Length: 97
Image 1 (tube, helix red, strand yellow):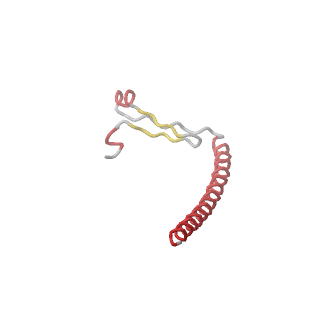
Image 2 (cartoon, one colour; image 1 turned 30 degrees about the horizontal axis):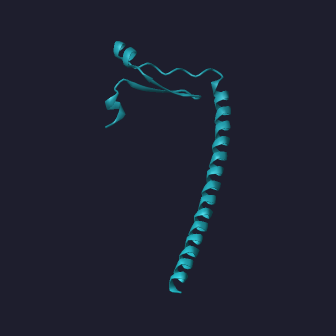
Image 3 (cartoon, one colour; image 1 turned 135 degrees about the vertical axis):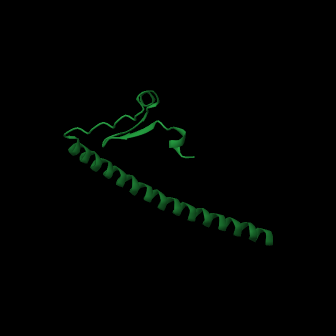
């Protein structure tokens, strides 16, 4: 079931620097209309671009870290498989003696 069907008065308001979800149950139900989103500041555009650049750099850094962790995990899994294969060989050769 769609969230809008469950909460018909649910309104999502997005600002360039933050995201706010407002539940307009009281105010929206009283006047029958959803509240309007806030307008951005006059100099908000420049500040917004600065924040976007900051977050983009952070996200790129996190992406590189995640990729490195995935590579490390693959190496660990290969080593575990090698150790497991050696253990199977050791157990198999002892059983034949």
